[in-house]
Length: 100
Image 1: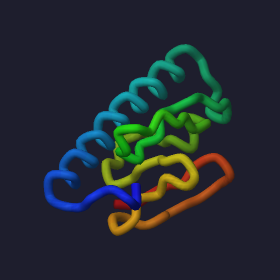
Image 2 (image 1 turned 135 degrees about the horizontal axis):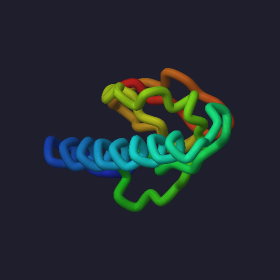
Image 3 (image 1 turned 90 degrees about the vertical axis):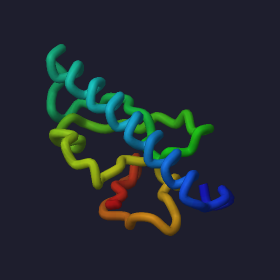
Image 4 (image 1 turned 45 degrees about the horizontal axis):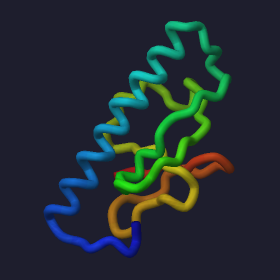
């Protein structure tokens, strides 16, 4: 993402993709919980980096995901942390938590 042009339109597009992926991930986690996934079982979620070409999946447990209600928090694949917007609020070997 660091080579992408900047500007107001790009920021809107990136935020929109991040929001869309967050909504999809919320649905995946909610479905996994209904189907009996344990709080510490890994499920595959989409990287929420907002890069239109990103197809990375990240392994996240329902416990790590939380309630999904924090729109100022993104879960992204390692190396997909945005530059210039947000800060890394947590990191493990599978994903980074970005605070917007």
